[in-house]
Length: 616
Image (cartoon, rainbow, N blue to C red; front, top):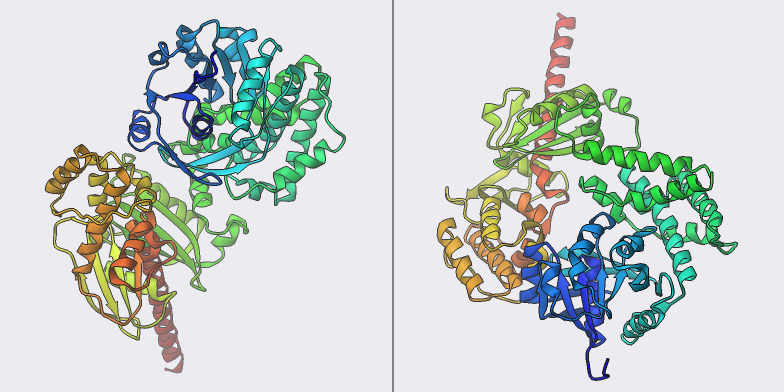
């Protein structure tokens, strides 16, 4: 290759690993082509580029972005990187076989043992490099990655030492942009692969099965004991494969894992979200090589089989009523604190509040001290008609509910609670539990906006609601974001990257959709569209009367899922707007508080009557 020619690199799979790699290679002067099946992500990358945040901060645009590997066949690639899940690799490799040429070198940039052999089965060992990745990131939006850590160096090597020159060149490219990567021989890359896999296998399945973050798993002596055993099994198998680790390797593994933060490993997230996992290339490979050498790997086998069984049966998100353990699953999912055995809650006086909203039904249970012990949420119009019944059954069979209160749009059609109250009064009670005295409350729900004024005694003194149109509500946000092709969960993050000040002219949902489409056709960046939508809602709220000089609190589903909304309102009012903790559950909390107060008053009346009877 002439020195003036750019090195051409294709990347298949643009998750966090692929995106970070793409940016670094572009910075190193390479011509980079991207390929991914997610067309929405591709549109974002084409229009806005790849955005890196946190450790690295950059916006990088790419000329070659494709939805099919075959579209890269005329580029004359020097390298083709596979940054996919291991179970996706074989299909992608077979599709990419059309790109094969004498100069092409393929790179497995994946976790797990033997993932490079998937590529070697298609392209041959002599053309395959293996890379051990020591960086990671979280997707903040389809084209935005928060780079969470880089523990240098990365490692790369030719798996049979036939392409050492290509491996060295690739490492030099990354080193030229301070992305430290070591070029090592075939034996060393195999060793580094086993090191990384033993670390992943020791914690990832445990976090998935137990739904524990890394920090939670490493803070409990019982789970730490499991981690230790998993590491020891991995080390014993590796040594049978003639892979020798330093004497302090085990200790370094434990030190590394104890630094894990409050987040889930990738495999755990896949299991929790009912996606296929890479267990076959993690613990499964340790088991496979253990059998080869007659080494017992009991714990790795147990976790491998558990993960497979849970994935096959979709246990993590089984439909309501699917098995007898459903009640326990609901209760464990909703418990605020999991320090007590379930029997404990059957022995405590508890009070239930239900907020039957237009979009979601929220449940909150408090104890006699007024402290929340359980929160749960289901779709009001759930495809599973038994969903709400199953939650109620779980609540009444697991908690000693002394009194209950229903509120929200559906309260009049729900007869299974002791009393009903308006969401206005419940909102006031919920906020007043944390913030005493006079206040404004802004509640943006699924289909309306309310502004509530409370006096010094925490009583509702006045309230205002928007008109019957759902403009500016949660439903409005969902419909408008869908038309703009913005994922609802990404709107806040997108808007936070914009300084745009234009708002929608229309609040009629129909006309607003048309206006949004005009913005899209005009090529307006998605972050500007997102911010424009929030500004429109803020202006809608501003037209409703707020009492000046007293605190403002925000609650509701929009507050819970659109944190940037409070930022816009603060700028709009030039005043502090506080979002209550667990804003979507504030109204159901207020209902529970009212249930508790009503029960206590009833008990006082009963006690008084009993005393009167005794005197008579």
